[in-house]
Amino acid sequence: MAYIIPLNNTMQRLRLADTFAGLALAGSAVYIPLAVYILSELVSEAGR
Image (cartoon, rainbow, N blue to C red; front, side, top):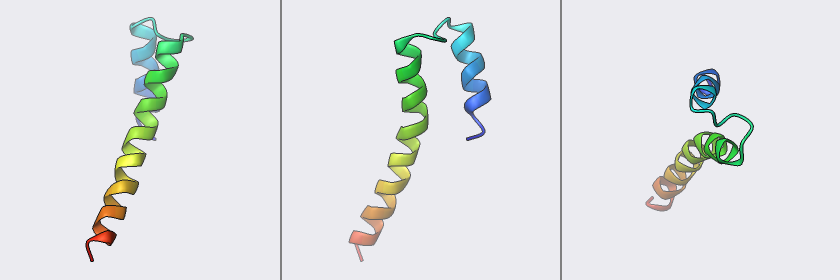
């Protein structure tokens, strides 16, 4: 979660802080890498 502070700075520079688009972008930045990690582990276990 080390990218939360730079993400916040980027959101402020793009004027997306406190907007729905900013919320969607922040959620995607957190949940997509987590989902990729979980699914990659699942696929590697299914191949065995």
